[in-house]
Image: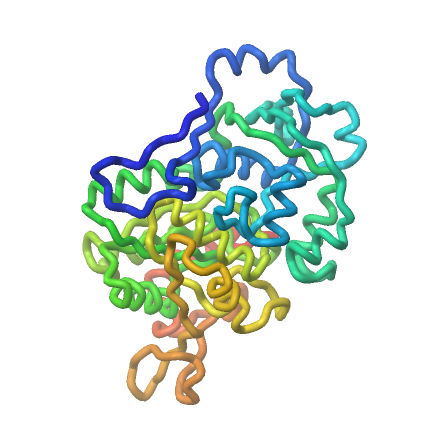
Length: 392
């Protein structure tokens, strides 16, 4: 079923990009065709993108970018239609794998098992100079950048075309995943019209909690949507289960205002693309029904590849994109006042996800002001039980 879903007529939530949510699921006729189709095996990340096309998270996109759409996004941070869009969403493969595929053909996409989970109606097949592509995408060609390394290893042949989703992926924390249609329904049922979203890739800690609650107050929002990324990450990053379990523990303990928070996972993956990805993550939350989006100093960045003000600069350059950024400087703890403040203050002690990872890896406890004991209990139980905390 290929359709565009109108926003709920009684909802006062912000409209999705293009005014309607894209919805692309296979019909019985589509399913009948599958045994006759050529199958292309693709990485898990590509299949995750397919599912987000189908759910409307990437509205108004209906599939992987062709050469013209990609060029527009890289050159102007907009789609040819003029809608804001900053991040390439592309299907890459090796030239040898694409040799038997033609424009106008429908093929099936499958993961490691070989079982098709999506269909693509091919509209374009093209190759790119990978250094030029990476420079435009990430602002660097360095293989030390994890996003660059992933893209360069994925192949220089690109396939564009509309996606049709066959069925749900077997994904971690599937029970926590909410589609844009579901979040919009939940927010509307709760009577919300202003929703501030938080994107993260670490377990709950006190700096993020402070930022979230401050943003809720600063924006006058009706509610907060905590929406951690649970897809593949670089080695050393936290796995989905401990992230979601940590937030569930904090919510269950009543650390947030009652009736003001929704928790749901975002089944995508980190590109580490700095400003481009910061705007992209905001646009996805606009499609989910959010009106405001929290942006930290190094949101979606990695290492020292992006400047301190790079995210703010791109948001300002883009202008009104239909979701308002809420910027925060790093937060630290001031032991003299017992309060959380900007880390620029000489009195404050810093709080970072990196420090949390290193301390927990060593099996040590963090101070309560850094991370709540109830969260540390969850994470240390993972270690004690022999369950992994981090990506390898």
